[in-house]
Length: 472
Ligand SMILES: *Cc1c(COP(=O)(O)O)cnc(C)c1O
Image (cartoon, rainbow, N blue to C red; front, side, top):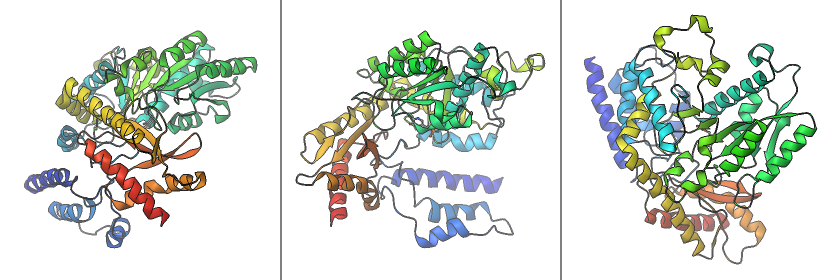
């Protein structure tokens, strides 16, 4: 134990020094050949190594090569820097190491509050028990779709847990062309078949076209396929678009579809005053996925699925017959009755600490700061003649293209496809690409509380420099 105390103090110093120094280093750099070999090829030591010795390796061979997301000029994918409060308590959660499957201990009790706070933040109704923390939105989506599938079968007098999908009328699901791939993965995994997964086209602002949604539903009904699920996005990964949630909620109600909202990244955007009206209808969803490990910066992993009512997911997952439920656990039962995981980590400590440290005001400020910068980036882009904005900025994502004057369409396409990797290699900023309306695009997602307007200027200059590198 004395060993642990001394080593843990050194580890705390290492973590603090790492975080303090991250903005001075390159955003990303390749792992050296020697360290790459050590990382992948080392053999298991026969005798165990002392704790302090392990820290030497962490300091010399692991910490120097971060993925980049701690840096204020990291604009890639949707990966935030870790919240200080989350870093602070992560080792304590490990020290307690409970399984949050259930039982009567602080891990389980605190998860109730963490989940309720998330629901309250975005204005989603929260009956007790209607939600749980997950590994991320991918698992949250599987959980929601399983509950939806269970309800749809029950409506037809079947228990899908018993009968499986065999011999039943096909059921269709609707997602927009901009939906995250985790929806497709969940549909495949739950045996729903991608042949019944309908891709609804989007409008010019990359929002689900609800006229098309109605048309696809009607076509399925005529063909004898039963529509049962629609997923809207509150903040798509490509452009941050928020679908017309109220309209989709109305269509879902009319046809008794389960209405799911993927707010993994963007649900918190509702806290930016000018964006809030665009989220109307979010509170009408049957389920809402929201990742605390995205915008809030809770250290990975921390996802969350919220449900309108608690009974549905429990019916879909609980393997405890009602007459054997652990009454000592209270009427809500165990978390493991609401999802796929049995042994569950103490995610709630990191989520709770992050939320409590920021407070509501701090969270609102974070969302406003980052969405404000995404807008500023759009303004900078519109003021230059060598950049083109590709989508309206709704959350904290700006999607654009580098189009140096005099370069033809094919070259511009090749250039934009090559720019992200070239920017990453230069190490002064990190951005990733995507495809928008079939063409290569650049995409900057702002999530870091320490990012400034100057960082945006550096980003644009880095893109220009990378473009010259790729061209010559
Ligand atoms: C990140 C993300 C997902 C997937 O969530 P994971 O936490 O990576 O499993 C789904 N949808 C959106 C919009 C996302 O940003």
